[in-house]
Image (cartoon, rainbow, N blue to C red):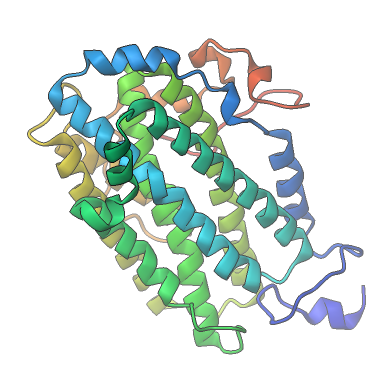
Length: 339
């Protein structure tokens, strides 16, 4: 490797094309591992969910309606930031291979949620309203505005020339990894698995589990990018940056709690705003700890059904063959996050 290549940092402006010699082999392994975990929306059977929907109470129907409305645009926001921000500034061909794969996965997620809405909301007007949720439903609009704020923070930056610009980029990356994919979506997953724990909406749970694994890999990659940047440019992640990250997660928890109040109302059996508060705080602490920052809340996970996410084999709790998800994968798959 030339001295010039050795002196380059991950966020240095440019469009590096050379895969050999490989500067960031771990990013390439992320890409290879993602390719192994390929699934399609056609593999998700939602037929049994239709009958389950008719069994739900009015409060549960409200919850599921709000949930699918959030799903309708959530991954599209993530995909837009990936293309407009991450791909532009992470100057590594290995990393861009992974980001290309992640974009494909986000497209599959969007297709899954489109299919979900078409199945769950047969009325045309109801579907239109769900897709307009970021404008019409305050609790979803607040979450969307949180996302747009961090997209806008780097929107005008063409090249990361200064430390301040690189800090803004890192905050955007951490926001999408820790707060949006790592908190907003993990909150949504909890509602899905609550239904599953009661024997309801198994099709939704199956597709969500596959989304869950994709999102876990997205977070792992993003945090490794943060680790790499901190190693190459340790002065970027200073005390002020740490305070900003903590404040960002606090804001995300409050936005997701507002969503929980909307979904849960006065409370449902086994699911209420206070339990969701504890869960979100627990997840937020995990994200802070992964970033090497002090935990903020000290809360414990109140949802025993989320412990299932630590199992080694998907078929242990979905009663489906592992090959329905995995393509050419050998061995077991484990989740990185503790609940």
